Length: 149
Image (cartoon, rainbow, N blue to C red):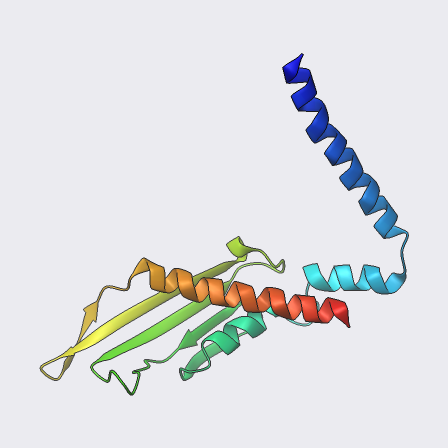
């Protein structure tokens, strides 16, 4: 009996969710357009919120490549003026037209200056994750702003 009760609750929640989607579909066409705008992109090949957020997140570094159709942003090497003995290069790939965490990939390379020569150095996984989080947070903020207008 407990198993049946445990099954009914998620089923009831799912039915309510489907019903609310049906009600939302009956709302104004502005709402439908906003929902579509939140999920898809028509002017570039990838999600526009992720694209704009990515460009903003890496704007401190010079760009080598920015391909909105392919969803690839590549920066040139950037050395923080407060730490000139270290430099980073980033690649951001947007893989989908939907605003989802798995539609974003960030890769970074790091080099340190040893006796006048740049030598590859490891990048902490937390650094890449932090940049992905910054991009996703900004993309969601851009989406909220677009939906509220």
